[in-house]
Structure formats: C-alpha cells, structure tokens
Image 1 (cartoon, rainbow, N blue to C red):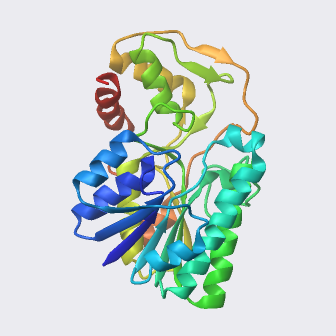
Image 2 (image 1 turned 120 degrees about the horizontal axis):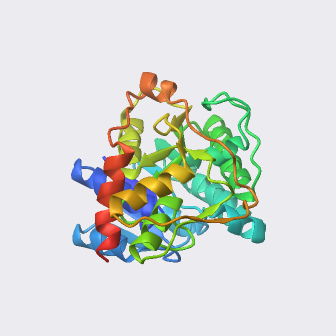
Length: 308
C-alpha cells in the first residue's frame, strides 16, 4: 500500500513515516522545509523515503505526486497557538487553504482515504471532562479555528466526491525528534532548559492539566486508521489521563536529577485550563490503546535531549 504524508519532515510527520515504513508500507511525502528537524531529514534519507520539497498549497504539484497513492495522511500545519494570534492570516492561509488545495488534488487523483490530524484545540475551553468527540467545538485561537475548518472541509469534500476519511483529534503529542524550537511542546522545553541548568518556565499557576500522548502511540493510531472499516469518523487520540504542568516540571526535574523551582509567568492568551481525552470511541472502533506510559516516554526523551 502506498502512503503519502504531508509535512513528512516535521516532528509528527517523520515519526509516522518511520513507523509505517517499518511495517512494510511504501512511503513518500512532501514538506516545505520551513520547520523541519535535522533528525527527521537524516532518518528519512537513511531509509530511502522519497521527499518532495513543495508547499501544501501547490495544487498542480501535489496532484502529480499523488496520482497513484492509496492513502493520504495530512499532518502539515502551522501549530503554534501563540503565533496564530500574531499571524492569523498566515494560519488560515496555510492550514485551511492548504487543506483545501490537498483535498482538491485528492479528488483528481482517485485517493481512496484521507487521514487528517486535527487537534484538541478545536474544543476550546471544555465544558465537561473528559472531552468526548461529541463535545461542542468552540476554538478560542486562530490555530484551533483553522484545524476545525480543515475538518469541515474534509467532511464536505468526502460527501461531494466520495473518498473515505478519518479525523484524529490529537491531544498533547511528545516524543523523539521534537527539537527545542518555538514550535516545541512543553515537555521538550522543560527537558531542554533543565538539562542546560535552567529552571523550567510555567505560564500560569501550573495547576492546568494536559493529556500527553507519545508520538509512537499516535503512529499506531494512524496505522489502525489506515485499515479500519469504521470510516468517516472523528476520534480523540490521547491517553485519557490528565497531568498538571506543575507535576510535569517536578517529575522531569527528578528524572534528570536537577531540582529547580519553576519560574512562573503570566498565563498566555489561548491557554486552556484543563484538557484530557475520552478515548472510549477510539478503543471501541479503532482498537486503539496507548502503550507508552508518560514516565517511560519522559525517560527516553531525556536521554535523547540531554545528550545533545
């Protein structure tokens, strides 16, 4: 089976590519090379995975590349919530128009299935916890709005043109290959600072909670989505377990063996107070179950980040 991945050189994209390659899938993908990691490019090239350097909005180029592809996995997106407030038009153009361009190309190339990586940001501030797929979607950031718009486009295009889709609403993804950049998640930022003998920075009081899911568990969810008969569905992908940011900073410090009192700063615009997933639908229909416990994932990531 031939799999095409957008944003293949990104943190999530390249981990998916490597995982699916190890399972025997034929992999190719595109990336605009604006936010790639050096690790990603090195690993993908070592495996001989074909990478096309092009933008997700380049309809004609993508239509040519995917002409004999079975499944498209759409990971490409700008993902920084704070940046989305500063550059909302950029996020709408890239995330929404890019998705529309990709979908248009898919309709001309007879792609059978599209797997779209959405975000828990589409829910906004939760009314009820844990968050199920039936929870109202009221994003509070341009980023969250752009991901929800992508979902709506996919559902509409599927009805109009007949391809199958799976939408995966990812919670907080972490794991190897997530470099310490403005786009990195809080786990990577905490580890990087503590390894450099700097205290972690917490925005708000640290009592806010998140659902941290390892990127390899995300890759497993995607393989299940490639093969499932339960199409045209939305699934939460997380662990179903909340972790406070304050506890996260404490446990990372303890694992590294350097105890620092966090620096607390003002809560940032768009930050949600509490968020964790109800994954019962994914368990029932995809057969999904997260395998990597947070403590084990942190130990592995600390080894990778602190040795650099």
